[in-house]
Structure formats: C-alpha cells, structure tokens
Length: 114
Image (cartoon, rainbow, N blue to C red):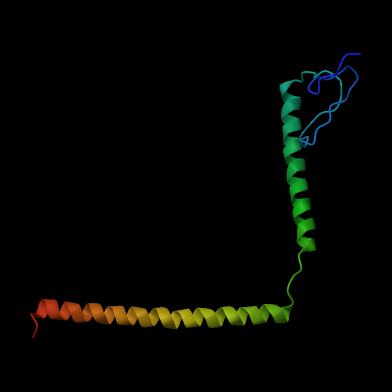
C-alpha cells in the first residue's frame, strides 16, 4: 500500500477547516451571469437586509443590558455634579493664582519697580 502524505487529499475526502466561512456558497451549480438590472436589485436588497439585520441585532443586544434604577441614576448624577463642582473650585483657584502672579509680574516690569 502506498503511504498517504498528510498534505495531499484523496478523491472523495472532504476538506476540514476551523476557519470561519464568510459569505461562502455551498452549491455545486456554476455561476450564471445576470443582467445589470437584477444585480443592482440584488445589491439594494442585500444592503436593506444587512441594515435590517444590524438594527435587529442592535435592539436584541440593548434588551440584554442591565439598566440602572432611577434611584441609582440619581445617585450617580449627584456624584458627577459634586465632582464637577470640586474641579471647578480647584481650577478657578489655580486660575486666580496664576492671573495674580502674571499681574504682579506685569506691574513690576512695566512700572519700573516703584
């Protein structure tokens, strides 16, 4: 008996692969050329069905989301407002200090040190 090489296929043997088959066609019929009008209709239909499928999947995923309660949302909103206010105070203090320093330097440099 002849020894079979691993990389060679024998007639009747099926091809096995773990690679995903994207847009694969499994029929054995030869491709038939269509006129341009039907191709455009197919493309439009395909684009419409893709958009429909996308929205369907999007709404399906949104149903799976665990939405926060009103109490939890109000609590998080309060935390955000407090943090923004704290940063407002800190940044305003730095701004006031820097502006005072610039004003002091400007007065001494222009006034000639009076």
